[in-house]
Length: 232
Image (cartoon, rainbow, N blue to C red; front, side, top):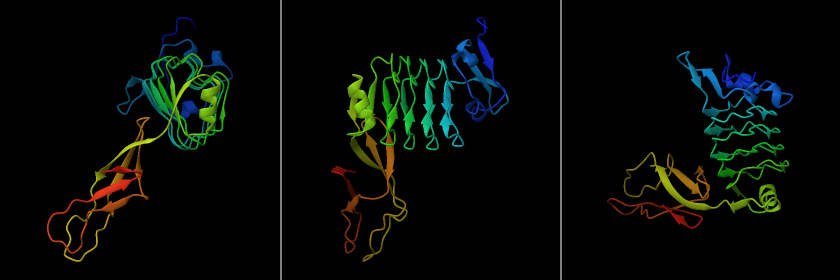
């Protein structure tokens, strides 16, 4: 199949993830350059942004082997393992976040993803295989202190950085913004979003403090939110 250029797959990503490949030659993307799926208009469209559905619990060996036109990959929390060579030579991928819940990353899983510059690996990952990031020059691993990912980075001379909070902001105001004198402030509906140094964000649901409101004061007031030393 040396002349194969385009692969037209008449199924879904969920269907593709359920295929078992027994080696690199069993995946037709070993030969093809472009992978097409039917879109919502029932037209063929090249896959460049991969969103794995939450019905998938594992990404098998060679599942996305040499999908070198993938620019982004979104893995759901339902996934617990990433198999050997799963994303081998996805050479257009620049960053990826491994979700909490994944416990293992297989051998050569991201080998030769030579555009990959950052990957976030959570504490849930307790096993990282040999050569998982071989050939990923310029890669930085974002991880937690004393984690498997930190140990792996040290042992394999990969640059790493401990995940830390860099800022917070109020991304949604409280449901109630008008009060009568004597009425206590109610933060219900307010969303406080934390931003981390790896570029990820998350909604903070507890642990923050609100100040600046006086129930006996009439007129406009400004509420300040404090979380782990950061103010919004």
